[in-house]
Length: 279
Image (cartoon, rainbow, N blue to C red; front, side, top):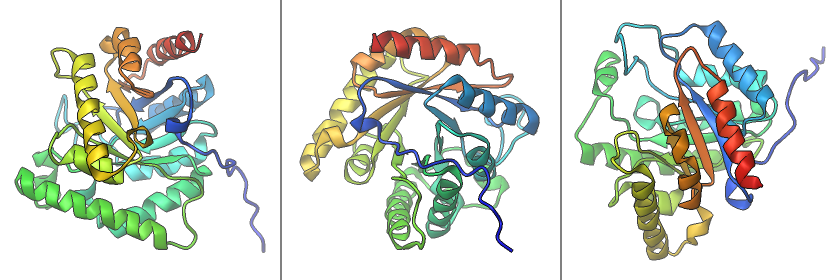
């Protein structure tokens, strides 16, 4: 019996570094919520015309009640892949310490196939010690975590190149972080996208511009065109007035970090800013 491939989205190639104009998205916090509202939110976000929809990769809530509801990243992305049609989807970001990097690459390839080639694979080294402890995962010091992260990024890329079938689309690799000495060097060497989240910065736009300049210099040192790395930034709802400044500083993709109850009117405001800049 042949099972029809119902509902498989057509391949959409995701490469913001090659696009003109700002792109915008939303990160839906998978904490202190239920599956129903999460699913409704990503379907609505896709229907609104957002360019991307993301979730994070944690095992415990990291704000509010530490015993509150929480859902796992890659299970959600699998469902998102088949319930959306247009937006890029992705992990912002997935902790490489949680999973064998070769298995993580296989998971990402499979989700990319389910989405029709719309996945962005966001990776980070991890920072939330409580969830590592709760799940029996080691949490070494910063240097050891970065050593392991670098090895994992390279292993993920190696495995993606060996899988049969491979990803359905380009499967961009995003690295999140702001470490000037090691993280941004790794971005320059290995990533297609870079993401920064300046929630604690006194002057987020200025810091983003400065870090982007550090990334430029790393790209030059490793022999890579700085324009090959797409600059992305995540903002809180109260930072929407900064979006034009981020775009002027070189951001090509801005993601709104949105907690429950997922007021997508704020995402619509972000889309209005995007459309206004497109003029």
